[in-house]
Image (tube, rainbow, N blue to C red; front, side, top):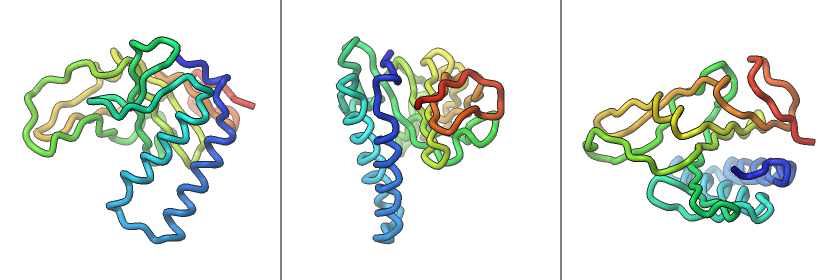
Length: 166
């Protein structure tokens, strides 16, 4: 897994604030959410200090450059770390009826909460065990205590594993 202590998270969160400010300033419509997400994903690649390569693969967003077989999925979730469980996260959206199975496409999931400047890392096995297959989507809600959290804002309130980056 990547070493988050080698990432420049201060610069990454600064980029996120600038991207969100531009989104609001330009009054971009909901159709631009994909653009905003892409900009944030590319910023994380840049600030990963050469540890990740953005791929936009089928079911994953990055590959690790340290362990090239490792795949990473990325989800930006509003209020992800506000409570002890994430809001519903859409893992897959087939836009049609799905086939009732969910193959492994990533090794771990990074969930970010821009407002709280916090990211959480969840292992595939746990994410898969909490996944719900719906007609056209696969969703999940994840217990924050199961994440390895990295934040610049100090301790989070749930007694979960927390790594403060300074």
